[in-house]
Length: 563
Image (cartoon, rainbow, N blue to C red):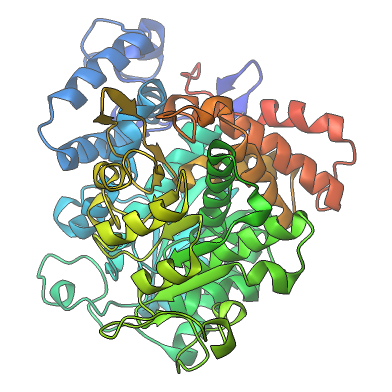
């Protein structure tokens, strides 16, 4: 969507720098696509090769250069440099080749990019708001490029994917997420701002690394942390009062409390809690259809009871309540397993988020337990006999052969989702799950996996990834000007995702659409979210019929501007 001030009358970009300075502005740079007239007018003669190219020709060259890189990290670096050089070409490239580009700019490669952020750092993008500079937060926000911001992805980098505390290197996550907001959701990149809250790091290897670009100090905690984050959030409210804020990769002790503190103050959500939950719920709904079971009858075991696991459980509870179950009845369907096994009353460190799912002794009094590791995942699966097993533990190989075979004993088509990212942290590999389940399991993963060929059949492995949810969610919220993000919006997201692949019942068929269809899916999600905002009175739009045209009008396309 073109914003006032970006373009003069007739669709031309207004006041611009001259010559080399123009080539250094990625939002305006066209490279070899500048026309001769533009080169004459803006002092570009001799700064570019004389041949004039189309955007299509540039995409072809960029794709060849991308394909020539030998490693995924090299491809990531190439795309980041292209984004900093020519934003229009960058987005056109990743939109033309989503299946190849998404795993490079996002999971799983973004995890390696975070780990090696200081080594591969080239050019600043976004804002680093460091604790030692806490007296200058308003000034730092004034330095934001662009000056008009409608969506912010913010992280303190404490829980990056399944990799943990990566300090300033977490900036690669907001950059990647916002790239998908544009590529998948059609949100103008000139309205997007990535932010890292640099509150130090407890990663000793980073503190000892002479190349580390972040604040070399242990993480601040307690009132100092809370006060600093609040100062940042209040400054964002002052500077960008209508912006959608996405919390990303905050640690277990902060993710839920921050969401609870600010969700009624501003338009914000936590993607690890709510976005993950919406995609997981939608994919479970698709899996239930494929398995021929009623969603309302499902028992769930979730391995990993952190913010993501509890967020998934909470969203699924809302889904079960929509089928007529009470809170207590819905919560009773969930068995959460963490590092100390089943979440139960005799544990000392149960979090507020886990409290709704704590099991009392009468709920497992008749269980048969192993002597060596009672209440661990295998015990829980054996006794609960769930239809759905979800993994958000970050523990590689947690879903053992014994666990998968136990799931298969009680289900004609068990639903097994190893959702941890990046790929190396997955609870099991799809090939193993299919072998151990004799090809019966319905699988979705957090990171991309190749199809599995078994018994002459190809099994397409769907990526149950937040990229299916947050771009469309953001598009819908921004298009109608929603003032808050509601639980019902995530329910709308899940329902669209759950119905997105009608043929999912066929053996080997995916539960989710391919990445090539994600932009169209995001439009559907945006319309559903926008209509939800209208129904709930969360925006100034009053007619449901206005939502679809507003969504289409808002969508940005990667096309060169006339200068």
